[in-house]
Image 1 (cartoon, rainbow, N blue to C red):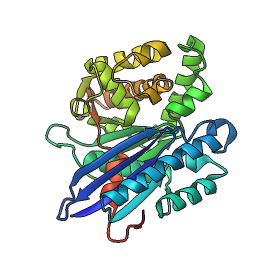
Image 2: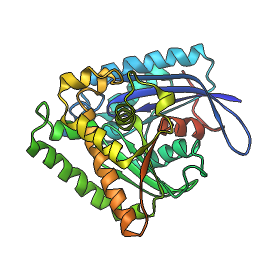
Image 3: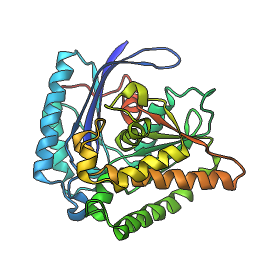
Length: 324
Protein backbone atom coordinates (compact mmCIF):
# COMPACT_ATOMS: atom_id res chain seq x y z
CA UNK A 1 0.00 0.00 0.00
CA UNK A 2 1.17 3.51 -0.81
CA UNK A 3 -0.38 6.52 0.94
CA UNK A 4 -1.00 9.29 -1.56
CA UNK A 5 -2.64 12.70 -1.62
CA UNK A 6 -4.57 13.94 -4.63
CA UNK A 7 -5.56 17.60 -4.85
CA UNK A 8 -7.99 18.90 -7.46
CA UNK A 9 -8.13 22.67 -7.73
CA UNK A 10 -10.93 23.84 -9.98
CA UNK A 11 -12.82 27.03 -10.69
CA UNK A 12 -15.22 26.69 -7.76
CA UNK A 13 -13.65 24.31 -5.24
CA UNK A 14 -10.40 22.79 -4.05
CA UNK A 15 -10.54 19.17 -2.88
CA UNK A 16 -8.21 16.76 -1.15
CA UNK A 17 -8.19 12.96 -1.12
CA UNK A 18 -5.69 11.13 1.06
CA UNK A 19 -5.92 7.43 0.26
CA UNK A 20 -4.02 4.18 0.39
CA UNK A 21 -3.44 2.74 -3.08
CA UNK A 22 -3.20 -1.04 -3.17
CA UNK A 23 -0.76 -2.76 -5.48
CA UNK A 24 -1.83 -5.48 -7.87
CA UNK A 25 -3.32 -5.91 -11.34
CA UNK A 26 -6.17 -3.49 -10.51
CA UNK A 27 -5.33 -0.55 -8.26
CA UNK A 28 -7.89 0.14 -5.53
CA UNK A 29 -8.26 3.14 -3.27
CA UNK A 30 -8.97 3.09 0.44
CA UNK A 31 -10.02 6.54 1.60
CA UNK A 32 -8.31 8.10 4.60
CA UNK A 33 -9.44 11.74 4.28
CA UNK A 34 -11.74 13.56 1.84
CA UNK A 35 -12.09 17.33 2.09
CA UNK A 36 -13.62 20.10 0.01
CA UNK A 37 -13.55 23.87 0.33
CA UNK A 38 -15.43 26.27 -1.93
CA UNK A 39 -12.79 28.91 -2.70
CA UNK A 40 -14.12 30.22 -6.05
CA UNK A 41 -10.62 30.53 -7.54
CA UNK A 42 -12.20 31.31 -10.91
CA UNK A 43 -14.09 34.35 -9.63
CA UNK A 44 -14.13 36.86 -12.50
CA UNK A 45 -11.62 34.98 -14.68
CA UNK A 46 -14.04 34.74 -17.60
CA UNK A 47 -14.33 38.55 -17.61
CA UNK A 48 -10.82 39.68 -16.62
CA UNK A 49 -8.58 36.81 -17.72
CA UNK A 50 -6.82 37.01 -14.33
CA UNK A 51 -7.02 35.31 -10.93
CA UNK A 52 -8.55 37.64 -8.35
CA UNK A 53 -6.12 38.32 -5.43
CA UNK A 54 -8.74 37.51 -2.77
CA UNK A 55 -9.70 34.28 -4.54
CA UNK A 56 -6.03 33.31 -4.83
CA UNK A 57 -5.52 34.01 -1.10
CA UNK A 58 -8.50 31.79 -0.17
CA UNK A 59 -7.13 28.99 -2.32
CA UNK A 60 -3.61 29.16 -0.91
CA UNK A 61 -4.99 29.17 2.65
CA UNK A 62 -6.75 25.90 1.82
CA UNK A 63 -3.56 24.52 0.26
CA UNK A 64 -1.67 25.21 3.50
CA UNK A 65 -4.37 23.39 5.48
CA UNK A 66 -4.03 20.45 3.09
CA UNK A 67 -0.26 20.44 3.55
CA UNK A 68 -0.76 20.06 7.31
CA UNK A 69 -3.15 17.15 6.76
CA UNK A 70 -0.63 15.46 4.46
CA UNK A 71 2.03 15.71 7.14
CA UNK A 72 -0.36 14.49 9.83
CA UNK A 73 -1.27 11.39 7.81
CA UNK A 74 2.28 10.55 6.63
CA UNK A 75 1.55 10.96 2.93
CA UNK A 76 4.25 9.52 0.70
CA UNK A 77 3.39 11.18 -2.62
CA UNK A 78 1.33 14.21 -3.65
CA UNK A 79 -0.14 15.24 -6.98
CA UNK A 80 -1.76 18.66 -7.32
CA UNK A 81 -3.85 19.21 -10.45
CA UNK A 82 -5.31 22.58 -11.44
CA UNK A 83 -7.90 22.93 -14.16
CA UNK A 84 -10.00 25.48 -16.02
CA UNK A 85 -9.60 28.75 -14.09
CA UNK A 86 -5.84 28.36 -13.88
CA UNK A 87 -5.53 27.35 -17.53
CA UNK A 88 -7.23 30.58 -18.53
CA UNK A 89 -5.50 33.04 -16.18
CA UNK A 90 -2.74 35.39 -17.33
CA UNK A 91 -1.25 35.48 -13.82
CA UNK A 92 -1.29 31.74 -13.20
CA UNK A 93 2.41 31.89 -12.27
CA UNK A 94 1.38 33.58 -9.01
CA UNK A 95 -0.78 30.55 -8.30
CA UNK A 96 1.98 28.10 -9.23
CA UNK A 97 4.50 29.78 -6.95
CA UNK A 98 2.00 30.05 -4.09
CA UNK A 99 1.15 26.34 -4.25
CA UNK A 100 4.83 25.42 -4.44
CA UNK A 101 5.50 27.43 -1.27
CA UNK A 102 2.45 26.00 0.55
CA UNK A 103 2.80 22.33 -0.35
CA UNK A 104 6.31 21.80 -1.62
CA UNK A 105 5.02 20.38 -4.90
CA UNK A 106 4.69 21.77 -8.39
CA UNK A 107 1.03 22.15 -9.37
CA UNK A 108 0.18 20.72 -12.77
CA UNK A 109 -2.05 22.94 -14.89
CA UNK A 110 -3.52 20.17 -17.02
CA UNK A 111 -5.21 20.40 -20.40
CA UNK A 112 -8.91 19.78 -20.82
CA UNK A 113 -8.12 16.44 -22.44
CA UNK A 114 -5.98 15.29 -19.50
CA UNK A 115 -8.68 16.50 -17.10
CA UNK A 116 -11.23 14.39 -19.01
CA UNK A 117 -9.00 11.31 -18.90
CA UNK A 118 -8.48 11.62 -15.14
CA UNK A 119 -12.21 12.07 -14.56
CA UNK A 120 -12.95 9.00 -16.65
CA UNK A 121 -10.39 6.92 -14.80
CA UNK A 122 -11.85 7.90 -11.44
CA UNK A 123 -15.41 7.07 -12.46
CA UNK A 124 -14.57 3.89 -14.36
CA UNK A 125 -12.60 2.50 -11.40
CA UNK A 126 -15.86 1.72 -9.56
CA UNK A 127 -18.38 1.17 -12.37
CA UNK A 128 -19.92 -2.31 -12.53
CA UNK A 129 -19.96 -3.20 -16.25
CA UNK A 130 -22.78 -5.69 -15.65
CA UNK A 131 -25.09 -3.07 -14.18
CA UNK A 132 -23.80 -0.20 -16.31
CA UNK A 133 -22.53 -1.50 -19.66
CA UNK A 134 -20.17 0.47 -21.87
CA UNK A 135 -19.39 2.45 -23.75
CA UNK A 136 -19.68 4.94 -20.88
CA UNK A 137 -20.03 8.64 -21.53
CA UNK A 138 -18.56 10.34 -18.46
CA UNK A 139 -19.48 14.01 -18.00
CA UNK A 140 -17.67 16.14 -15.42
CA UNK A 141 -19.33 19.54 -14.92
CA UNK A 142 -16.94 21.94 -13.25
CA UNK A 143 -16.96 25.62 -12.51
CA UNK A 144 -15.17 26.72 -15.65
CA UNK A 145 -15.27 23.74 -18.00
CA UNK A 146 -17.19 20.56 -18.69
CA UNK A 147 -15.44 17.40 -19.83
CA UNK A 148 -17.06 14.67 -21.92
CA UNK A 149 -15.20 11.41 -22.41
CA UNK A 150 -16.39 8.18 -24.02
CA UNK A 151 -14.91 4.74 -23.52
CA UNK A 152 -15.17 1.35 -21.89
CA UNK A 153 -12.35 0.79 -19.42
CA UNK A 154 -10.14 3.36 -21.17
CA UNK A 155 -10.99 6.71 -22.80
CA UNK A 156 -11.54 6.55 -26.55
CA UNK A 157 -12.62 10.13 -27.31
CA UNK A 158 -12.71 13.26 -25.15
CA UNK A 159 -13.62 16.92 -25.41
CA UNK A 160 -13.41 19.79 -22.94
CA UNK A 161 -16.14 22.41 -23.29
CA UNK A 162 -15.12 25.86 -22.10
CA UNK A 163 -18.28 26.23 -20.03
CA UNK A 164 -19.15 25.48 -16.41
CA UNK A 165 -21.40 26.59 -13.57
CA UNK A 166 -19.34 29.61 -12.48
CA UNK A 167 -18.49 30.78 -15.99
CA UNK A 168 -22.09 30.40 -17.20
CA UNK A 169 -23.50 32.21 -14.15
CA UNK A 170 -21.15 35.14 -14.55
CA UNK A 171 -21.77 35.31 -18.29
CA UNK A 172 -25.56 35.00 -18.43
CA UNK A 173 -27.56 34.33 -15.25
CA UNK A 174 -27.67 37.71 -13.52
CA UNK A 175 -31.19 37.83 -12.03
CA UNK A 176 -32.76 35.75 -9.25
CA UNK A 177 -34.19 33.60 -10.71
CA UNK A 178 -32.82 34.23 -14.20
CA UNK A 179 -35.09 35.77 -16.79
CA UNK A 180 -36.32 33.70 -19.73
CA UNK A 181 -33.95 35.62 -22.01
CA UNK A 182 -30.96 34.94 -19.75
CA UNK A 183 -31.81 31.26 -19.53
CA UNK A 184 -32.18 30.96 -23.29
CA UNK A 185 -28.86 32.72 -23.88
CA UNK A 186 -27.17 30.31 -21.48
CA UNK A 187 -28.79 27.29 -23.15
CA UNK A 188 -27.72 28.54 -26.58
CA UNK A 189 -24.15 28.82 -25.30
CA UNK A 190 -24.19 25.23 -23.99
CA UNK A 191 -25.82 23.87 -27.15
CA UNK A 192 -23.14 25.47 -29.31
CA UNK A 193 -20.47 23.83 -27.15
CA UNK A 194 -22.23 20.47 -27.38
CA UNK A 195 -22.34 20.78 -31.16
CA UNK A 196 -18.56 21.15 -31.19
CA UNK A 197 -18.15 18.31 -28.69
CA UNK A 198 -20.33 16.00 -30.79
CA UNK A 199 -17.97 16.45 -33.73
CA UNK A 200 -15.19 14.87 -31.62
CA UNK A 201 -16.99 12.50 -29.24
CA UNK A 202 -19.58 10.12 -30.78
CA UNK A 203 -22.28 10.81 -28.21
CA UNK A 204 -24.74 8.39 -29.80
CA UNK A 205 -22.52 5.39 -28.97
CA UNK A 206 -23.06 5.84 -25.23
CA UNK A 207 -24.88 3.03 -23.47
CA UNK A 208 -24.44 4.52 -19.99
CA UNK A 209 -24.35 8.25 -19.21
CA UNK A 210 -22.43 9.01 -16.00
CA UNK A 211 -22.43 12.44 -14.35
CA UNK A 212 -19.72 13.64 -11.96
CA UNK A 213 -18.98 16.56 -9.63
CA UNK A 214 -20.98 18.90 -7.44
CA UNK A 215 -23.56 20.15 -9.91
CA UNK A 216 -24.61 16.62 -10.84
CA UNK A 217 -24.52 15.26 -7.30
CA UNK A 218 -26.63 18.20 -6.10
CA UNK A 219 -29.21 17.62 -8.85
CA UNK A 220 -29.28 13.97 -7.78
CA UNK A 221 -29.76 14.88 -4.11
CA UNK A 222 -32.75 17.00 -5.17
CA UNK A 223 -34.22 14.22 -7.32
CA UNK A 224 -33.86 11.73 -4.46
CA UNK A 225 -35.55 14.13 -2.03
CA UNK A 226 -32.66 13.94 0.45
CA UNK A 227 -33.03 16.01 3.62
CA UNK A 228 -29.23 16.38 3.81
CA UNK A 229 -26.31 15.61 1.51
CA UNK A 230 -25.63 11.86 1.66
CA UNK A 231 -22.76 10.60 -0.52
CA UNK A 232 -23.68 6.96 0.04
CA UNK A 233 -27.20 7.53 -1.31
CA UNK A 234 -25.99 9.64 -4.21
CA UNK A 235 -23.11 7.46 -5.39
CA UNK A 236 -24.33 5.05 -8.06
CA UNK A 237 -27.86 6.44 -8.10
CA UNK A 238 -29.63 5.80 -11.41
CA UNK A 239 -32.29 8.41 -12.19
CA UNK A 240 -34.87 8.32 -14.94
CA UNK A 241 -34.41 11.05 -17.52
CA UNK A 242 -37.71 12.59 -16.42
CA UNK A 243 -36.60 12.79 -12.78
CA UNK A 244 -33.16 14.17 -13.62
CA UNK A 245 -34.52 16.78 -16.02
CA UNK A 246 -37.30 17.72 -13.59
CA UNK A 247 -34.80 18.42 -10.83
CA UNK A 248 -32.62 20.41 -13.23
CA UNK A 249 -35.61 22.61 -14.13
CA UNK A 250 -36.54 23.11 -10.49
CA UNK A 251 -33.03 24.23 -9.56
CA UNK A 252 -32.70 26.56 -12.57
CA UNK A 253 -35.97 28.30 -11.69
CA UNK A 254 -35.65 28.37 -7.88
CA UNK A 255 -34.77 31.60 -6.11
CA UNK A 256 -31.54 31.95 -4.17
CA UNK A 257 -33.53 31.83 -0.91
CA UNK A 258 -35.25 28.61 -1.98
CA UNK A 259 -31.98 26.96 -2.97
CA UNK A 260 -30.27 28.01 0.26
CA UNK A 261 -33.06 26.38 2.28
CA UNK A 262 -32.46 22.97 0.69
CA UNK A 263 -30.81 20.76 3.30
CA UNK A 264 -28.47 19.04 0.82
CA UNK A 265 -27.20 22.31 -0.71
CA UNK A 266 -23.60 23.32 0.01
CA UNK A 267 -23.56 27.07 0.76
CA UNK A 268 -20.85 27.58 -1.85
CA UNK A 269 -23.08 26.16 -4.58
CA UNK A 270 -26.20 28.20 -3.91
CA UNK A 271 -25.42 30.91 -6.47
CA UNK A 272 -24.12 28.64 -9.25
CA UNK A 273 -26.17 25.43 -9.04
CA UNK A 274 -28.78 26.79 -11.45
CA UNK A 275 -26.15 27.07 -14.17
CA UNK A 276 -24.73 23.63 -13.36
CA UNK A 277 -28.20 22.10 -13.56
CA UNK A 278 -28.80 23.87 -16.86
CA UNK A 279 -25.60 22.40 -18.33
CA UNK A 280 -26.53 18.92 -17.11
CA UNK A 281 -30.03 19.17 -18.56
CA UNK A 282 -28.67 20.16 -21.97
CA UNK A 283 -26.14 17.31 -21.91
CA UNK A 284 -28.80 14.73 -20.99
CA UNK A 285 -31.16 16.00 -23.70
CA UNK A 286 -28.50 16.03 -26.41
CA UNK A 287 -27.08 12.61 -25.54
CA UNK A 288 -30.55 11.03 -25.39
CA UNK A 289 -31.31 12.48 -28.83
CA UNK A 290 -28.03 11.19 -30.31
CA UNK A 291 -28.52 7.71 -28.83
CA UNK A 292 -32.07 7.57 -30.22
CA UNK A 293 -30.82 8.65 -33.64
CA UNK A 294 -28.64 5.53 -33.68
CA UNK A 295 -31.51 3.24 -32.74
CA UNK A 296 -30.81 3.04 -29.02
CA UNK A 297 -32.60 4.37 -25.96
CA UNK A 298 -31.12 6.23 -23.02
CA UNK A 299 -33.53 5.73 -20.11
CA UNK A 300 -31.43 6.54 -17.03
CA UNK A 301 -28.46 8.62 -15.96
CA UNK A 302 -25.98 7.45 -13.33
CA UNK A 303 -24.33 9.66 -10.72
CA UNK A 304 -20.86 8.91 -9.36
CA UNK A 305 -19.10 10.39 -6.34
CA UNK A 306 -15.85 9.05 -7.83
CA UNK A 307 -14.32 11.53 -10.23
CA UNK A 308 -11.12 13.36 -11.15
CA UNK A 309 -9.93 13.27 -7.54
CA UNK A 310 -9.95 9.46 -7.59
CA UNK A 311 -8.32 9.53 -11.02
CA UNK A 312 -5.49 11.71 -9.72
CA UNK A 313 -4.92 9.41 -6.74
CA UNK A 314 -4.83 6.33 -8.98
CA UNK A 315 -2.39 8.05 -11.33
CA UNK A 316 0.24 8.59 -8.67
CA UNK A 317 3.08 6.14 -9.24
CA UNK A 318 6.69 5.72 -8.35
CA UNK A 319 7.60 8.94 -10.14
CA UNK A 320 5.07 11.12 -8.30
CA UNK A 321 6.21 14.38 -6.80
CA UNK A 322 6.71 14.21 -3.05
CA UNK A 323 6.48 17.06 -0.62
CA UNK A 324 4.26 18.69 1.98
